[in-house]
Length: 110
Image 1: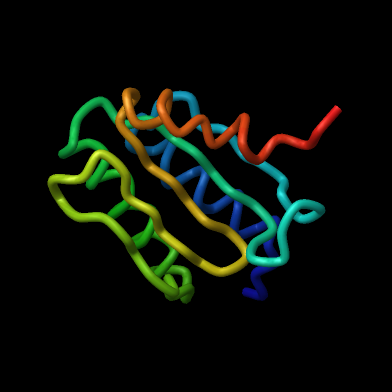
Image 2: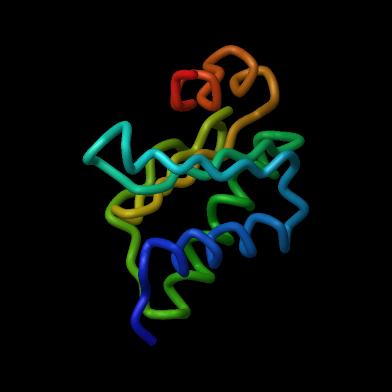
C-alpha cells in the first residue's frame, strides 16, 4: 500500500483511538512549516498510558510497513513524540498539554 500524508495521519489517529487516547486533535501545518504536514496531539491519563499510546502508534504503523524516523521521550515521560516525517504524533499528559498549548502554537493565524 502506498502511504500518503493523509493515510499516515488517519492510521496514526486510529492507533491512538484504539487505546482510548483523549482529545485527539489533528493539526494541518503544511502552510506553517516545511518539517511536517500533520501533527496529532493526544492526551494520556498517566505516564504509562502516554507510553502505551505512543508504542501503539509505532507498532501499528510498523505492521503496515512504516518505520518511525525517531521516538523521543521514555516510559517516565509526560510527553512522547513519534516522528514519521509527514506526520508527527505528540502524546502528552494533560498538564504538559495545557502548559505547551501546541494547538494554539500551531494554529493558523486569523
